[in-house]
Every structure is written in C-alpha cells, then in structure tokens.
Image (cartoon, rainbow, N blue to C red):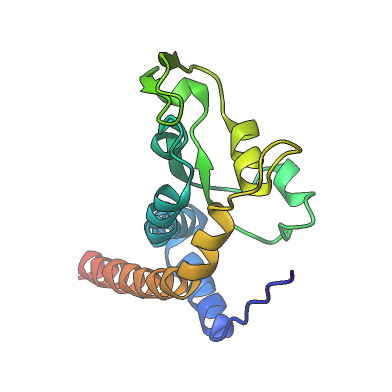
Length: 174
C-alpha cells in the first residue's frame, strides 16, 4: 500500500521562513517554527490517542508531541533532508519524562502493571503488528487524516507569528 501526499503553496511557505530568519534571526526562526509545529500536530496527537489500543491505557497516556531541531543522526536518515530546520512528530514519552502510574489490563482484568520503561517497542508492535499480534495502526492514520489540518494550522500560525514579530519590531524602531 502506497500513500502519496501533494503539498501546494510550499514556495510561499519557504519564502515566509526565509523572511522570518532575515527579520529576526535563526533563534527566533527556530522558536517560531518549533512552537507552530507543536501546535499544528495537536489534531494528530488527539486522533492517535483515540485510535491506539487501550489494553492498559498506558500507551495512550504517554503519547506526546515532540518538536525539535534535527540532530546529526536525523540528518543522515533518508526521511529527513539536511536542510530541515524543525522536526515534529507524535511519539511516546521517554521513561524519564513520565511518572510511573498504575494501569489495569482491560482485557484480562488482572492486576496492576507499573511501567517505568520507554515503550517504543510496544508502539512499533501496535503500529505494524508482530508474529502473534495483528497490526492496529494509529500513528499513520492519525497523520494521514489530519495532514490538511496540520498544514493549515502551520501556515496560519507562521503568518500570525510573522505579523506579531513585525508589529513588535516596528514598535521597537519608533
């Protein structure tokens, strides 16, 4: 199964990004992009939480939005261009970022489970399945169904941020 996305208006978006960097510098550009990307990904996060298996409920509660500057490792990935400034994704919080919580298995009704570990393996198992468990994708459908809203939110947020910074910049000049 192959999914294809078509993006329009990217030339204008790239011009906006360059204008933000020219007007306010790379630090402001990164902050504006990171905050805008985090906000734009909220619909995908909400959909992913609705679609994920609810065996214990822990996977749904640890889903989060990660928006950050790409690392060198990211830039060597075939999915990330070396020129990208910000990466935003729905991911699972690392074990150090969430407090241990007690979860009950809804299917077996058996005792409590306390999890401290990072759950990336469970995420992959749920998304793609295993030899013993069929796939129940939740991240890909969340992104696919929300991609128009994500792009719309991102473009509106970038335009609003640019106007906000412009008006602030004009006040400082007077």
